[in-house]
Amino acid sequence: MADSLAAERSLRQWTHDLLDPDDNPPFYERVFNLFLAVLIVLTVVALIIDTVPDLHPSLEPWLEVLRWVSLIVFSIEFIGRLWVAPLRVGASPGIRGYFEWLLSPMAIIDLLVIASMAFPEVPTALGALRALRLLKLLSLLKLGRTSPALRLIAQVLNSRMPELKSLGLTILVLVTIAASVLYAVENEAGTKGFESIPHSMWWAIVTLTTTGYGDVFPVTALGRFMAVVIMLLGVGVVALPAGIIASGFAEAARKKHQREEDEDPTVMDLRDTIQLLLPHLPPEPKAAAERALERSRA
Image (cartoon, rainbow, N blue to C red; front, side, top):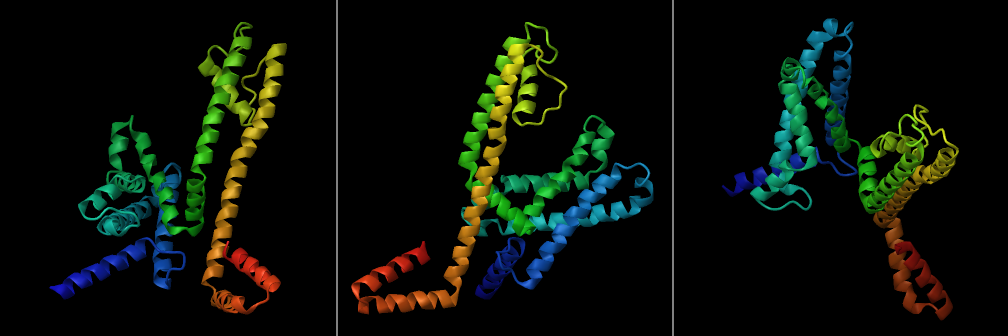
């Protein structure tokens, strides 16, 4: 009995490591996750081909095979992730850990993708729900599990979420103010596109993001002056997110470099040697060595 429980725990841990590899996974884990990534990309490519009338009939048998393969693999993956849910970092023990994972965004995405593959004709038959076929595009989000680069992007965005939320609120305030001002100025002149504040918000968003479609524009002198001011503000609006995210990448790179240094046996031996020599050094060299040691640990 004890041996069977130990074997189950070992298999569950192996499955967890396979589905959620660390930064330096063994070869078989890299191969498995590469297979998942390729299958995800092929699923999206199949969806794109399915919308091309000239290509779809000739490739339909292959697309059907790919759909079944994807459905089976993604279903097994979903069951495996549910099985190992309590082993996730920060997961609650017992049955609560399963429910926490089932309610997580990625689990819901998995279910939607599987449902769109299991019932491909339902949206088509309902007509109005035809767009639900595009749920397969959600499988692209699954790439974040298999791609270290995408995982890094997610970590950076998560680490900078407070700043990005503050920036989002600031942008919302600027859009509302810009739309209200241009509505007040241009509506009296009967300018098209400024019939209401919600209508003016389209112009405000396009202008603040420096996109400038040109379909809606102010015609009065005051409106154009205010538009220039809003355009100048837009330069900062575009630059701020880039700066926040860039600082996040820089911090992530620094932490990765620090981890690599901390795990380097040569660096660790050097630190230990300095630590042993410190009590025997004269005051000035000792102070310099202590500062160097502190910098290496920072």
